[in-house]
Image (cartoon, rainbow, N blue to C red; front, side):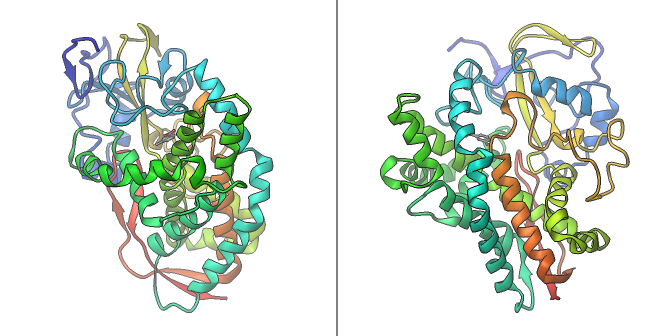
Amino acid sequence: MEPTALFHGHKQISPPQGVPILDVDPYDTDNLTQRTYFEALRAQGPFAYIPRYGVLACGGYAVTREVFSDHERFVSSRGVGLSDFGLEEPWRPASIILEVDPPYHTKTRRVIMRALSPKVVRELRDAFKADAERLIDSLLAKEEIEAVTDIAEAFPTKVFPQAVGIKEPDARMLVEFGAIVFNAIGPDNDLRNRAMARNKDIMPWILDRCSRAQLTSDGIGALFYAAADAGEISEHEAGMLVRSLLSAGVDTTVTGIGNALWCLATHPEQYARLKEDPDGMALPAFEETLRFTSPVQAFFRTAALKTEVAGIPIEEGTKILCVLGSANMDPDHWDRPEVFDISRKTVGHLALGAGIHVCVGQNIARAEGQAILRALAERVDRIEIAGEPTWRPNNAIHALDRLPLRFVPK
Ligand code: OVV
């Protein structure tokens, strides 16, 4: 490793010519849970310099999309958090899909794409539907439900490990691992330190789940090992791709489903429209939830070279916080972005990223979201808020901590 003086794990840069200084902490509890700085960030122009961390940040739609999707100038191989993997060791061996660039990325992406293809997801649909209906049915008699645990966590932690082919799943371990992975993307704060402390107990269990012996022969994980048998990737790489599924496939869908329930509970007129056509509107409602709440709030990219974006000079090694949640709320791009509207044209939202790293699990995520919202809309007449919804701070995820609801059955 180069003996460079590090600032928050990356090269210290000074504010580029023409970039305003924005003295906020995107990682304080208020900003993580209430997203208070989004508007101020967009008001600075294409970029703001955040002195607290020595990084650039962008939250306008056009610039965020440009930086996030240009994998040649703004690489992922140096980490998508504050830490520059070119300058310090990552907290765990780097992901072989998220935290790599082409040409290596092309190889692993191809394997994972095939394993999560529309055809594979189509075959999972019936199981998702039956599980979603059973879950919602089981909740109808309850006086009150805690939607984060009873639905948002319960559903993905049942159907996803099953789809992957995990022989010995454990919902709590999977949820905790997700929190660790996403908190790891942030700065050296309390959230990250607590995640790192828990990692010692969780990671060995996760890595055990990734081995060939711990996977059924008919799941998505087995498709990675089939690619290893075919000589496309190594046995070790197959295990690493399973680790990627468990890193990215639980907390994200848990959050998407929880956020969707919150959106619908707090917008009864939108829930009424979903009920009119559960089959047709479940997917658009989930997609608008993604835009409106951005379960993954922000990821970094790292400038691989001296370059320029929107007339702003950017030096090599610059970490850029791409605030996807803010881009999805940019009034320069969206008509009345603060309105939750399940009929809106959501195409182009950045909640699943953009470019070659765009969420590879998006089909499976949508299938999960759709199954739950459809089952709900077919069975539940009204969703009532039964207690104050609260948000759970996480360095990268915008998720609820608690969502007490009452279901009024049809
Ligand atoms: C947090 C996250 C997102 C996407 C991919 C991965 C992790 C990975 O481990 O590959």
